[in-house]
Length: 236
Image (tube, rainbow, N blue to C red; front, side, top):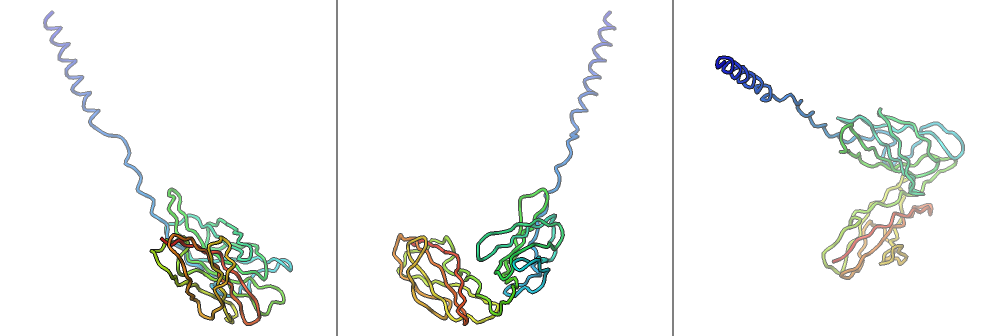
């Protein structure tokens, strides 16, 4: 009888010893490698500060323009952002290739850029911006593009000071900008003129603790004008 118990004990011992080996291995697959971040695309057409005279005319007010860019690395799709600078409305078009045809208004200034996206990551990359005029019927001289801010950047908080140099960039397809008028103040829609200048910089008096708003009105040799967006900054 003792032999039977001894044999049973040894059998259980060997079973436990052999079975324990299965728990030492790890069958969990390794995590997948991280998805590489996409890089920024390079815009090809329409080019910056040009008159876009290509495309298919649909009617007196609209034409179909093919937007083109160079492929970017690690990218599965592109989001094309096209902003009408007269209305500030933006069209967003998704493409998997490097071009897309979009219907836009004729005789209208636009700004566009491309966002590169990759599957499996929320990281994106944004191209540079380009402004252009979509050619319109009977237009011989185009209004200037709305000015872009240089300094102070939108939303900046400046150290305590009594004077700030407001600086911007102006551009025009016809290259005939004559002057700039700067509206400035503490109202969210500024109406007080700092004066008219031919350079792209002007000084403004400020006070500590104030929030200031400003915009630029650009005028060309034919009397055509454009208004920039309203920019704002704070002074400590």
